[in-house]
Length: 409
Ligand SMILES: *Cc1c(COP(=O)(O)O)cnc(C)c1O
Image 1 (tube, rainbow, N blue to C red):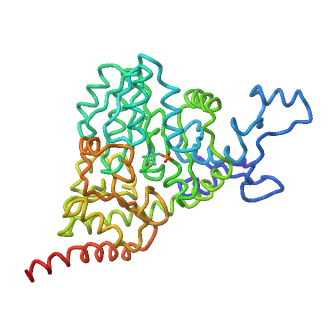
Image 2: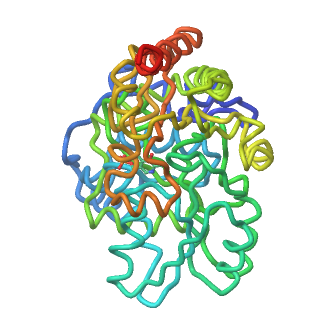
Image 3: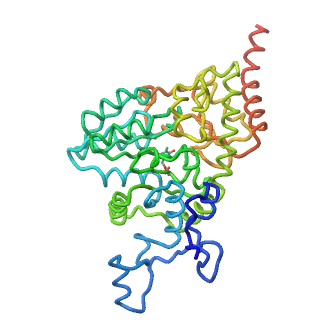
């Protein structure tokens, strides 16, 4: 007998993305997961109700705790991340903040990197210290420093790789081993890589976190977050979340599920395009810097090659002329939304000052080594050659005018 919602252990990611969590007996034999908008679930028998409420039998009580549509989303990502359990949230930041506040208590110490997502960084510098939690933020490029901070003793090691927006890569296996020697819990934000490109739990992490808003959903029309990993940790995080109420909405869960069925196709195309675009940009005379972990010139190419199956759909690059040039370059892109998002089917571009690091000051961005003339470019699923031509025309046009002017004067 085939168990509904389960895929074979040998199934490949493409099959898992389509079938994990899916059942053959949804409501009224619907092949697609119904959106269960009901806030509560009714029982004719009080004993049965009690048994579900006490967690002794399967079922749902109230949608802030669990919901059938949300449960299918959690099962699909749990399976793709090859984790024991998963619990979901209203957004990526809800997943990150609820996880950190579940795991940490006053007096505890967390070690992380300077290059985490802007909102995550705010939790480290603004909120955790208020609760008496010690935070050590290390140079993302310096694995020796990170290891030495971990070696001083800590309760949580929080990593993100590749990072936002300069796509630095940290060695998950190496740092997880160092963390486990201290008895610390290892959390990895896997948003940029997705489980198609990187499996943090298999590399030694205890928990993998996602902003499902990005690649998992893939269509920029639903916010969501999820944490996958060890069942005992997920149970604690779930308990915290059912009380804080940062639950995923069933309609958003449906949209994310729908998007996830094409995850493997989108990521394959985005991996392929991003590498070609990065190579093109690297060869362009007006481009001063290109950051992409799939480039041989990338500082962490060897680590990326070791722990990733593909290098992801996000790259960043700096152009000649500073922030002024960025402001005139971006609107010339025909095939890119200028927006604070990434991981969508459409290409999305923007400077860190209005995207990943909108919460940070100019000084904080400088300290994090983010050039003001940087452009974060999240490659969509458009044709690769069309995107290259688009970048090419935007770069050429922008600089043609001042060059001609120079000749005339
Ligand atoms: C967007 C993002 C987040 C935050 O997710 P939201 O869904 O916007 O709350 C966290 N981490 C990374 C790497 C992100 O890109």
